[in-house]
Image 1 (cartoon, rainbow, N blue to C red):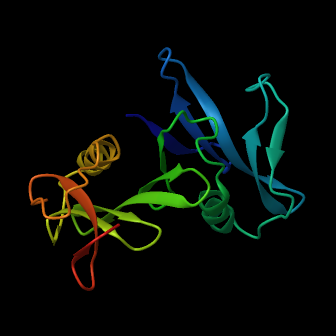
Image 2 (cartoon, rainbow, N blue to C red):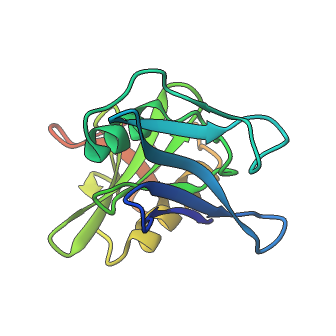
Length: 173
């Protein structure tokens, strides 16, 4: 498990840096920078990066905050990050799984929780899980992702992670 960290550069632009699984080298995997009075988002394209070329969203954004939010929503699945958890401008984390599923690890006060873009939260049994650190929450999500599913609908799930609907506390499909 690794993270793509968001860094504010000296010129006011932002960059995401990820450490490769193969070695300990960090590489820039996305950037947000001013361009012609607006802000643009770019990701490296092809095998020639980090030297170039880079692809990006064609439309300019009025602020770096708007561009950061758009980057989170439009981030290509597993693009350039080898499955990393990507840090947001608000210091939360997200990870895309395929084209539709987005996993988030967010903080409220001093506690962290995991939630999917469909609103289901990570828990055990019917209780939502809270974590002391973002790393603990990400580790629990990774464990849930890598655990084989037991097809027995009557099996007690209090001992393993599962996605639950917070309103009615029913286990997610």
